Length: 200
Image (cartoon, rainbow, N blue to C red; front, side, top):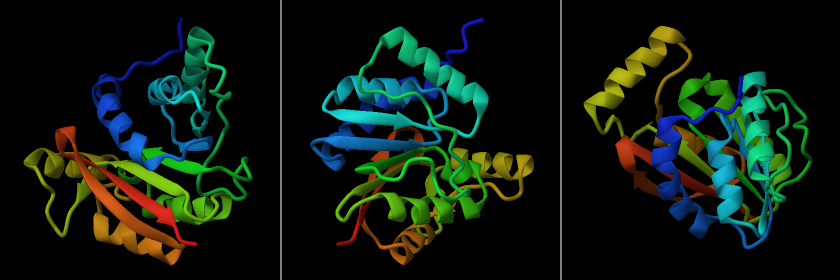
């Protein structure tokens, strides 16, 4: 059985994420992707940005197997083998990076994982480096769409510690860890990309 997973949502949102990354990522260096999931995004990004080295990670073994299958199939020289990384476990297995990307983790994890994401990124990133997140968010109390309200309820039914987060709360945690909130980009299906940058 081929372990490679191809989530339809990842296929749909990849071109829009690439547009955000073109403006946010550095010209060269190492991008640490947190909670890479299937690896579809990582492979597409590594292919699109050959001047960057991509380091996918995931705490789930099945996800890492899928990532490994993408690496084997696409033979991308700038995409490393996936690391087992849980943001709440310190130290992280990678001591330094030039950018951090986290797609669809913040709402499918306890709030402590968001806090750990920014704390860990602060340890591995240099000044002026970006931390980019993507997913559904609450914006000043607004869920943006009824589908997001239903999604939030379904997440909480699966795990009461999960759920959509308020952008202002994420920005507050970012600031506490030395990150400035650079901007928010609306994305398809009522999602947003948030870009933070480590202060000098």
